Image 1 (cartoon, rainbow, N blue to C red):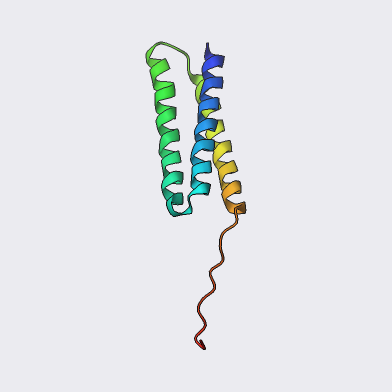
Image 2 (image 1 turned 90 degrees about the vertical axis):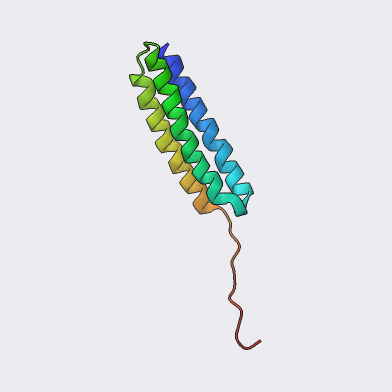
Length: 97
């Protein structure tokens, strides 16, 4: 049961990361809100996904380690994707015009 919980938590974290990162890249005006919401969602998923099974008597050590590793890896992937995205270059207005 611990392995199923670990796999479920990794899948949920990766799914949440994909959802929030894809929305952030589609909406430049709300980029910061989507990225911030993604971090809050991952923390909430971590808390609910590990504290509830622990309260029910499950061993969550493996699931906790897998979840933390999934958060670190998905945040690193998010950083790479965001760093590689194309942004518009703004040219300053010349003073001679």
